[in-house]
Image 1 (tube, rainbow, N blue to C red):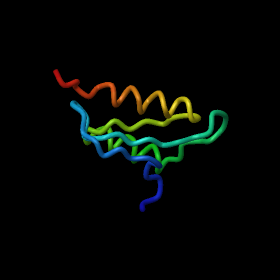
Image 2 (cartoon, rainbow, N blue to C red):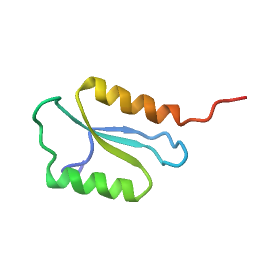
Image 3 (cartoon, one colour):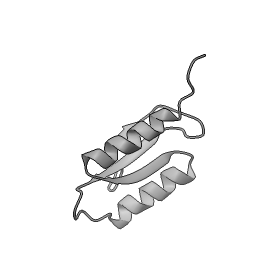
Image 4 (cartoon, rainbow, N blue to C red):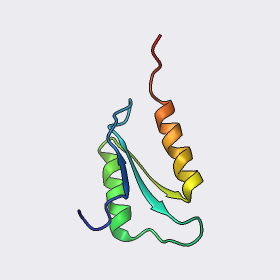
Length: 74
């Protein structure tokens, strides 16, 4: 574990991403630290989707949007 590393990882590659990382914050308040911002930027540069979410509903929305990128079987 490294300081600032995101709270949630979904290691499921879905084109064009290698996986999803989320930094979970409360709906109100909860600041993103410099270390957290570093990791999010780095992971995005490496081809992952990495985001800050605020509250449960926002986190669910981002996860569902990510999973919706998965191709459907014909």
